[in-house]
Length: 350
Image (cartoon, rainbow, N blue to C red; front, side):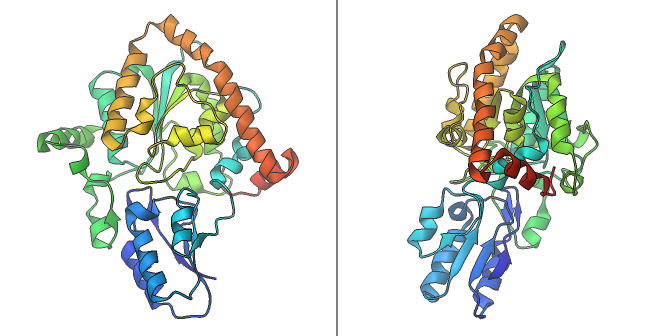
């Protein structure tokens, strides 16, 4: 197969012009695969689905495949006479999590923070959340860490336009007034994010890196996770180590991800926390989802300490179920626990 790399930077950008040019210029005999290299963006939202439709109209007898962890758009590909050749039924992150598996729940120690917020790339949504935590004095309730090398922020990246990338996150989606973006800009210039393990966006992917296992073990320092996932736009479901750490450590979670992310998790057999707090944010889009999560976090931070801890104890049956469900998903796919862990140990991301 002839593979064309679709380069994704989270769901902020994709190299659509380069992909289009290479796709239509290739005249060889091999079937073509648009390879997302285990990353996820929405085919429809980014315009890739339209490119596929144009290609199949022009070359109806040529084979064109997509290799992406996002299975929600498989039916759209099939309607165009294409298909997804990704080797896992769900994202490999979910089925290869054994390398940072721990058997026992990671219980919060005395003095633990209420939440963790562990962030990577400086997307607008993530930076806006950090801005709110700091300017509204909510940091005191959080264990905070931000991978080094996360900038410049998404709204300050002219190189994306120069290189021909199409950008899918715009300040116009978030700020009605330019003064609001100006306040975020001014705050960002003096912001000094801290990485608790001195990892960068690059070193976290080094072979045999133990970053993910380290963060699971560190979760004794908080009760619950506020997770900002990689994919947040379009018809996608991409559960990564960001949420998987919570499942392994048996922590409750609040997730800013793509629309209906929690609903898709429930489809896989996981339970979420709708019996304990409002999860209506899951059905909202973009900034409305962000605002609803901020409102929920503020409510939980305002609770008396004993009531909050009691709420976390009520969540334990859900978190225990989720870990058991994750393990069974992995074993069911790989056949045995031994096969699963052996396969995980062969992976280079830890």
